[in-house]
Image (cartoon, rainbow, N blue to C red; front, side, top):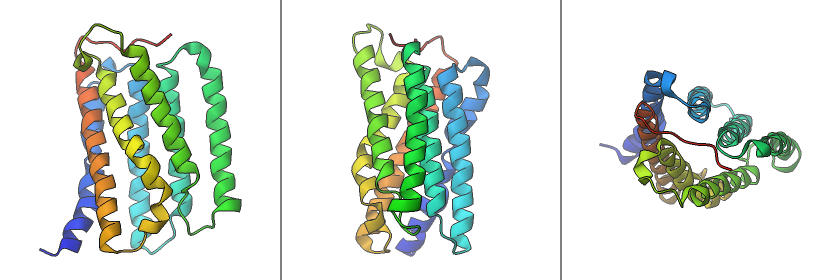
Length: 220
């Protein structure tokens, strides 16, 4: 089979469809979901819909740069909202302000700084770095707990986010260099999609464990 065809099937269809796995367990255990998990479920659903629109636009040879900007804003907003329900309640106003500021910066970057045919390689790495800081803060705060790591359903979600965004900080910076269909760029995109696949699997495990008698308590 043609390697290019295998690549297209893997990145265009297989990995995006794997988002259905955490969505399935999220819907199945919806009544048991805490607010952070409900926010995560909404993000995965909306993100999948944006990706579907992206694929349709690509098939019609339309520019999707603005869609990437929209996704970056949605991604950062939902994940920040999710952690606002995990961290101390006193931090919520600051996190809400951060969402607004980041969204404005993303729009200004697309309109005035990076042209309309370049991916947002300035703002998305910044968002990814902030998300990594969220994840690390959660690990530091929960590191002294005596219960097993696997018993906390949010640990699985946090691990998925940390793996994807920690590796993505650098990759997102050079996305525009990977737009050409060279062997090297195809390998990079395949790696990014594989990491995304791992993230989906870890999300699914987190949603699955929500039906078990475990809790994720707010951090002080």
